[in-house]
Amino acid sequence: ERQIRQLHVFFLPLLAHGHLIPTVDMAKLFADRGAKTTITTTPLNASSFSNTIQRCQDSGMDISVKILKFPAVEVGLPEGFESADMMFSSREGNKWELIDKFNQATSMLQQPFEQLLQECKPDCLVADWFIPWATDAANKYGIPRLVFHGTSFFALCVSECIRLHEPHKKVQSGSDSFVVPNLPDNIELTKNQLPEYSAQDAETDNFTKMLKAAREAELKSYGIIVNSFYELEATENIDKAERGNKSAIDEHECLKWLDSKQPDSVLYVCFGSMNTFSFAQLNEIAVGLEASELEFIWVVRKQNNDDKDDDWLPGGFEKRMEGNGLVIRGWAPQVLILDHETVGGFMTHCGWNSTLEGVCGGVPMVTWPERAEQFYNEKLMTQVLKIGVSVGTQKWVKREAIEKAVKEMMKGERAQEMRNTAKALAQAAKKAVQKEGSSFSDLDALIEELISCCNQNMKTPKA
Ligand code: UDP
Image (cartoon, rainbow, N blue to C red; front, side):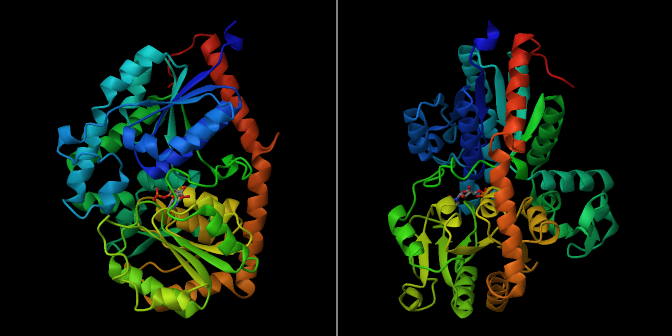
């Protein structure tokens, strides 16, 4: 009789937009197949996707949210400091100190979270890789823990090859390049591009310990879920507007603007939810964009609520760009924009969600990674899939490099080739999530396995 019992999947995402958004998508996929789903998060994070959840519930999906208070103040963070995004955008305090406190507060969620597991008795826990204690929590209640990786499978492979073979130890300086062994396409990186390496300069011991614990917890967990190229959600089913936050522009206004353009003519520029470019770099981007003479939508994150909006923009920029360039200050409806037929290219920081969304939108990309595994995703775009043009590897990117890269992506023969490849990938992504497509079948297989796991009461983790 267990078979007809509804599978209950619990989700515990990392507190950051880039992890919450795919978690909500995942919960929707499970709920769509009839599972009961529960997402656990904190008040501020819950409010950022409450509209999405409401829409899901209205359409009959069994999705609910459980809220845990985040002990920010208890660890010395300001009240309301509940998102990892804030660590990077905050101008106050040492970044590593903030990361440390944030992780400490996240660990303090273990006890109340276990209380929830005890009350709700789910059948399975999908928890973010960055939350190592989730494996112990799940084991305590005899349920399988699946590790969710917010990044690409490619980035995981690069990371593992580097960890096992340590090719970076053969080079001296941070800017010397080395080839990553055991990977096709002769992928070259520099030490400066390794998250582990850049972290080691400034990191606290606690951070290293946390990464180690995450790796160990992964080995003890039931399995892993990767939001890979073959697991794209069908564009039809994606909640395109307001993914994870309230848009700073009226969506109809944005669509009207895009509708007035030619197919594949608009460049979309956005660097994710945590970007920390200096005002000088933002100014340089503005000049580069203007010089390219392309039509564009440019999303500029406010770093601080009391930032004076326009101080850093070149004088008269928006007046001159009127009709040709749209600046969105704050959160943009990114998927809505990327899926629009007049959008023909994407300048991105290579966060994995953005990269996937660009692929699904069938657009080539100018890659401008900033941190973490974004450098690995860049290689996937530029060298493996060949739908990306790198803006360059230097820290400070000059206007000329910006102009050159965006033109190369948008205009000419190479641009057309990349666009054709990107469109073919978008088609493949759509096919993957249709009935009998690879992602569709993968999810079916996972659900079946979880149900049989409950049936046999084999709730002990596999090694
Ligand atoms: N995003 C958005 N509007 C914005 C900025 C970001 O909708 O103005 C969404 C974007 O579509 C993606 C996520 O936020 O789903 C960012 O995740 P990603 O992994 O690309 O980068 P991160 O923000 O984690 O660095």
